[in-house]
Length: 234
Length: 234
DNA sequence: ATATGTGAAGGGATTCACAGCT
DNA sequence: AGCTGTGAATCCCTTCACATAT
Image: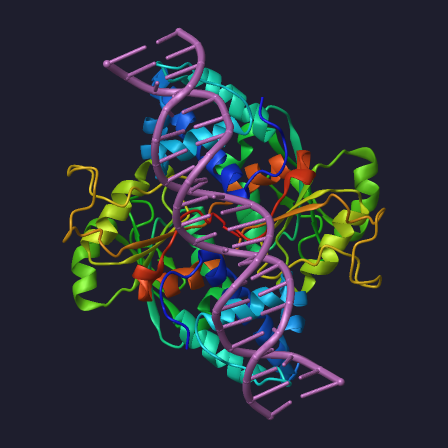
């Protein structure tokens, strides 16, 4: 087993890709794969696949490759996808509703347990079997329903406050769809997170469609300046 | 002027962030900024800001900092956002409609000029003042309307074919929202892009919401394993 | 023979220190 | 004095070669 220290963020993104490929192979009833097969499907090198997997263990058999169900199960475990994640959505405008209704998001036990907004026009309405509540009630809500993640789909000027509300409610994972940088700290305190700060250990991932458009504009004009892959992300 | 060789993809993502910050400063009628101010707002170091900008030129004044309108204009030029981009959306289901209707996407002269799908239930309907057309007519469409980018919002199993259609129509920038890897080559030819291949110079950017959820699951379980930022990417 | 797992080498991006301009 | 611009150094990720296992 490799020592667990820092793991490249790009490795985590690629593991997600490998897992998706393995699911496809399982659907096609392919029982076996290899680092070179996965690499081709993922658009990376076989070295990269093996190195990425080696951060977390040994999942293959030399001379043979990987068993699809085994590697799939192990990657799900590594990524934390073998459990249920309770999710609230903050911001139930067009984007928030699109997220709530996106079909495949129900996979992996990502369960939407609450929808929150500030708009009187939305509160009380039902979206995907959930009633939209006022975001001020989020604190009370988490006392009766455990919440693991919050998805932020509010306008950018409201994103920092909404994130603060999530963090104060004890939620430690935020998927930010707003095109703005969430400052991982409370505004009215210093500019460095104290130990014991409520933002300690909070993870923010960004999904930014507008940024993707703009990156694409640049690379469409300058295709030769592309150096590597992944982002995807973002 | 710095030599133009490879530019880190992360630099491009950060330039997009700096530009967004500059727009906010301009709205607040702030006339000046500095690398350290931008750095704090973007969540990076001032060294990083200056290095990123240095790839493209000298935009500041020593001892003074940067003029907001000047740096904004220059970044828009660098990113290719001082022109009009004609965009088609392929896949007009819930996701494609959400993208078409996302308000801020109208900025920067990203103009939706066509919507395409295969579903008889959608073709002929109007979404954001555009009539949905059959994707088979895309080739004819681009002969009368120049198209710079295609946004792919089809189900993952249809994404490769739809991308192929875009590329055959001569479109060289693809923003892929489907949770799958687009192979940058034509399926029935070898597994390496020939020179002269229709995929040469085609740029693919991915915006993958499901991948973001899964990365967030991992980092919420393992917050100490986070090494760097940006995804954004995605 | 074939394909994994991994230490070492290589390359690229970030960090740094400071020269240079206002 | 203050802040930018940039070569040099550092660090981290990717690539590689090969030892190892079936």
